[in-house]
Image 1 (cartoon, one colour):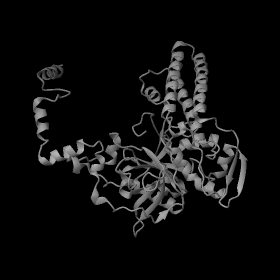
Image 2 (cartoon, helix red, strand yellow; image 1 turned 120 degrees about the vertical axis):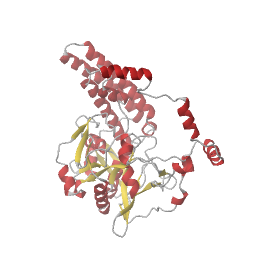
Image 3 (cartoon, one colour; image 1 turned 45 degrees about the horizontal axis):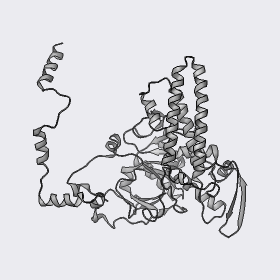
Image 4 (cartoon, one colour; image 1 turned 180 degrees about the vertical axis):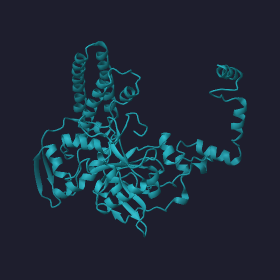
Length: 462
């Protein structure tokens, strides 16, 4: 009691406070640190007259120190372009399979229809969202899980397991069979409309749950409403993207000039071009996340697209373990699905990702120091883009010096469509790769047998 009274008195006196205002004294001290000398004035005029100050921080001493030559490089088949969409994960997954298709059918060029799989991905994500709303219908509207679902009912982003889920269920088709449309290439308006319809539908489902006292009856009514909503979702997708074919006849020209024809279904075509061990039991997502224990498996709740599909599950490993496995895969001509924080220290003109590309300290006189763990926990860094990891250059002792990405931003982006990343940049900004487990160490493979640690839908990494 005495402590409570003392604390109250101290607060009234201003000795104890939860927050501190910017008073005259503090403002004077802060302002005095900004010395307006000729050098500062020159920098101020220089920076304030151009909205792009990043280019002014380019480290000229680092120019020419990183080339685009590699000792080990996978046999890849050219650059694709995801346009203004978030389908990097889908393009990357498909780019890994393209060489096998081209070899099987003796093709000089080939690409998949990303439009076909995007249709099914968004339809399945819509169904998953509505099922999540039904499952949480009796939780408060401001419950953290409910808020997460309504904040983003669907989007066109994803990871490798989403491609596997939708391809396994619906198959794949060549690009000519279901070409891209204006809305598959530029998804914002279509996805925005879907989100609005799903939010309205999700809210009505919650009203049904609140108005019906009998749980079994409520569940039937909610599912009936879900079917109405899904019909609208299908209609929007069909109008924007076209309807996916159940079967197709594909005419193609071989490298020798022969005109061939193949009549099949999307699922049969998919089964005919994937490796025999192509499944989440063999192709493992590994992550470097220093905020969590290594050699443990983690699973994110409801991060999938199909109800019956695989959740996002990964094995957390140290960087050296990931690099050793990645190098072994590349040496064996097997590319890797990879994702990273691509915007950090990216020199787009040269196509180089290097920790020394830019120096904000040199321009602004400020020093920013955070390690990877701190950047993750403060939301300063996280995986933002998926690409195919295809090459590695090493020193005389076969230790990696730099790596190469095959990107999906078209041939005009970066170095003819490719990006070179230094090994140091790999350590700091690479997050995930999908790799055949035969390239992992015995310790890593053993760790795969453990039960995953479950992470919530609102986890800071996802």
